Amino acid sequence: MKAKRIDKERVYNDGFSAFIEEIRNGNVLLMVGHSFESNQEVFRGTFYDYILSRLNAVSGTEGLDFSDLSYDNRFLLDKNNPNHIRNLHEEIVRIIDENEYSAQEDVSKNLIRLISTGFFKFVFTTSFDPLVEIAMKEKFGDVRVMNIYDKANRDVASVSDLDIPTIYYLFGKAMLPKENEKAKKFAATDNDALEVIRKWQTDMANSSLLRYTSDKYILTLGCTQDDWLFRFIWYTLKGDSGNLSRGVIAEHAKSESLSHYLKMNHILIDNNADEVIEKIMNAVNTFNQDKWSVPANNCDVFISYSRADSEIAQKLYDSLTKVGLSVWYDKYNLGGKHGGKFMDALKEAVDTSTIFIALLSPSITKQSHDIHIYRREWEWAKELKWGLCADSRCYAAYSDDYDINSRKYQDALGWLAESDNFEFVSSNPCFDECALQIQKRINQIKAHATD
Image (cartoon, rainbow, N blue to C red; front, side, top):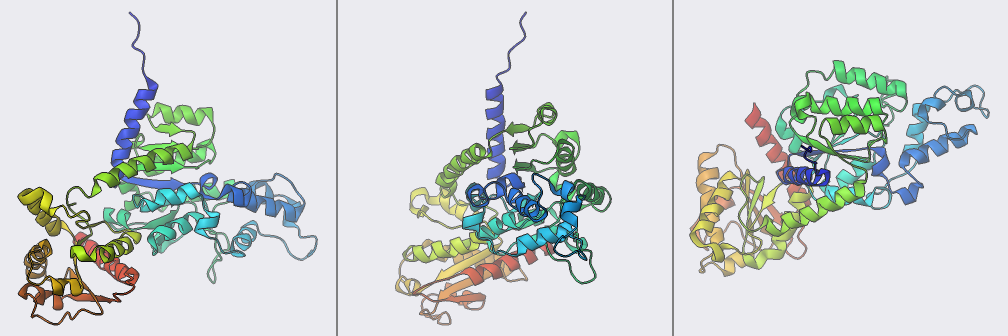
């Protein structure tokens, strides 16, 4: 009897479809390495290639890597200044610091596309340069920076911290040391990598971060470390063998041994990171088509607004999502299509959101005698959030040509005049500062919930 043939392509596609669903559920962390982060045309290769070419040019050498340079006297002994011995890490920092880098010019366009989806808020980088951090700031604005070398900021307090826009330097970040600190605060050579491994084994062995990452899926792009180092990174973040398979790896080190190890542990691998991203982007477009069909529960923010203020509501939405918040509002005016079931779903969305924002403009005044769903939303928010919560979770974002203190239009609005408010200019509304304050408030609420 012949053994049943395994359709490898079908197995891969089924696994990738399940992975896409995990992205949709916000259950995937991203890990980016140096072979994928930079604009290859600008740096004529990777950013690491650019740095190495600069260092080799200084010493008159060719093709030496960071480990080689750290031992080579042609690099270490400065012929132009015999009294000066070059420090590899200081030279790397100098090259990085002498330029300002732009997300649009210097960072991989596909990395920008991927992060712009908003699905990847917690991002690891195995690089020491700031390019992935720049990509994160392009999307989210304010980004938390974490670093294995930073004792005060290398662990998380709770699993909700993984929902905060964060860049985590797994091997340290190349930057000038603080006063009385050693210059080396990042891994460039093989010996540096071994030192960092010791930090992960001792300082981080019982960390909350590693407990939480083991249950998450990880999308890994361009992490081309040596076979032994990549295995260590993956095993450290994923924990026991039961969780090793939770992830997709693209453009890893081209090692038959490593590929065999990944396949043996049922980890999905793909040699083309750009193709993986294209699949994800196509899936994201499908998500977006379905995203507004029903009210979303458990969002960070619920926006309540008049249909006449759709453009303003969109700008508020854009600013809130830019800092990494999950937001829902009735974008396509679905209330009239779904009747009572929709109203039940809408109330549940208000009830389960962390923050409620009422968008107020002269449109509200003009519609004071008309029936509108947003007034129901105000009442639900008042009952649940203002009436039952000791801390305010309701905000009124009102335009400069709207009198928020007037109560002659409808009684339901009076309580909003007493809530926290954000005034915006009606002719050119900008909610970026408001979004940062809302983000800060939500982080406080989440932190309090875990106390």
